[in-house]
Length: 285
Image (cartoon, rainbow, N blue to C red):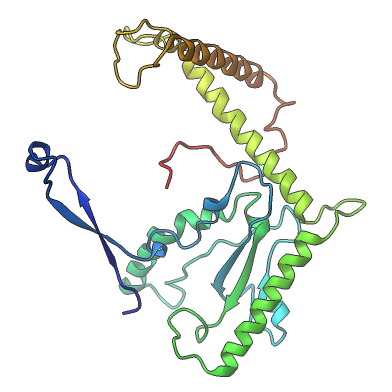
């Protein structure tokens, strides 16, 4: 009712006709709709490993037992003040008034859509730049015909959310603990998070890279330094200079991995922010 899907014509080169007729391939439709169907809060899309400028998120959520609606709009928005402040899990609560099948199915869909975003919002360096704006059942969402007074109330609530972001990220660091969240603290938390996950990634990489191969497999260093024309043939290193560069830099990376693996407790991960995130190889979107 609210969204119009947009078709994009794509070619499936696995079809026999298309493989045999590359100049006149058959196409099929790929339908594009609202990105919130798969991710409602992709705040990580705007990030570098460590930030050069602040980015913020505004999370719309329902009032609950912890955050009840207040006549003072400043109390209807919230964001962490200290590094150890925890964002409550976005519990669906479909069975609060008794288990029911429609509610269970709705919770499944909600989990499919939002589980990744909900977990991301817990990560240090993410949770401290998200301001939560609470809404009642009559506000936001599919309430398409809200009265003027409700719109005015939501506008004021949004102003309070903006004021809170400005206050948090322009305030100086305190002269003594505890540390409050601000831009300087955010940059440090992101550095600590990035280096801790980088260490874990490099240590895991080194362990596999230097491990003796099983079942007659070629060792990874030998794969890197194999002669031209030797299998595997895909994605071969193009010229000797590239091969020397890759071999030398990979050896240096593995050397760092050996040092980092034996550096505890005086390493990047000691006393790093929690919950501990992880570095994964994923397609770039």
